[in-house]
Amino acid sequence: MQQHELSEAIHHYLRRCFEAEETPRVSELAEILGVTRERLSRDFAAAHGVPLSTYLKSYQLDLAQQLLIASELTTTRIAYQCGYGTRRTFHRAFRRGTGMSPDQYRRKQIRHAVTKCL
Image (tube, rainbow, N blue to C red; front, top):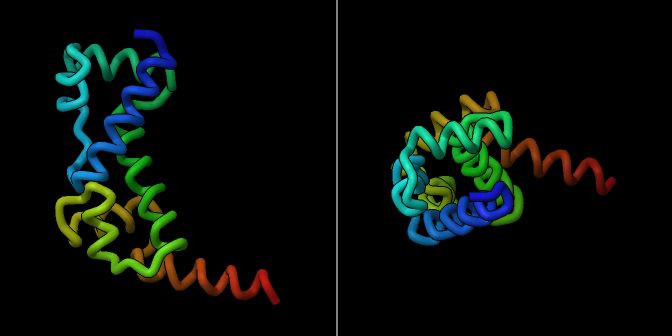
């Protein structure tokens, strides 16, 4: 599979996961693409310089950050929409990725936006 096709397939898969509020998994994506988990991971890492599992988690976190800034959804609702199985899992992953809780992140971004407008 060519790099462009792989990228398209991954983004399509992620959209489907988030619409269904399911956690993205390398093994599930590999099964959909008809390749082994190991081959998919190896090919992705060779093409992008980062493990596929890291990319999927990063994509989840980026989406969560966007929703925290652009919506008034609760953190629990955002957790599910971003494919985190529980609110607790979301909070743990978010803190690990950003160094702050989702609520702290939202407040900081709101303060930053207000300060920027003044």
